[in-house]
Image (cartoon, rainbow, N blue to C red; front, side, top):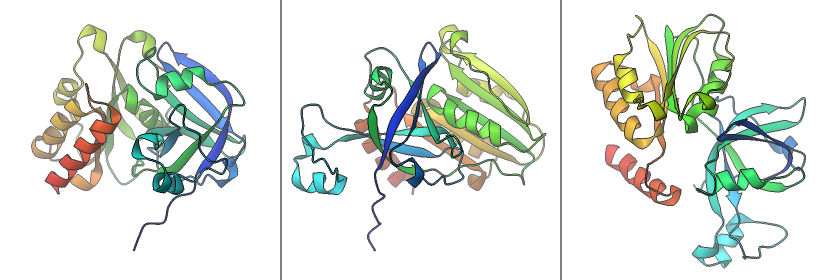
Length: 266
């Protein structure tokens, strides 16, 4: 049976916030906000639709119809981003973007947004949320995983033990993180030569069962997958681990490589 296509959701930018020198928060609402249904995952993500510049699409945008009638090079591009928070009461949905000047697609786009601008998303997807039936929690990642880590920390049960190891460029990229859990947060600085995989390897694991969330650049993710499964004995069903991006590869290239890797591991 063919999977039913998810409807597009149109949102309107309410405001943008510069959280750190390289992190921009886009807060959106309006439009089809009421049709967005949270899925309960703290790594909930949406796919943002980026029209190809210069291509004119129908006013009633239909992604499936565009793919049927437009050449592939004119298909809109998509990028997956974590929902930092969804607040039905205030009518706000926030997404955080890493911004490095003119580099990439989504970062410059987010930096140029102004209140009133509209954009389309698909989603949400996701698969992870902190469980209560474990002894402690491990969260590790870089800037690309920081929104999901922050959302997960906020959802930890009161007093839940844990370690969060987060790799960012320097101290200026650190953010205030809230949690009811009993979590040791360790910030690692890339500018100082920090190595996230090495930091996890050196971590003294507390006793008991761990639920782990490890996401970010594919290189350290691959290293930590082997370490956690083979050396630490983390249960596969308690390990959420995936490369969000790969150094030196565009998102389109990385998605193809990631799908091939997943197929080879199946």
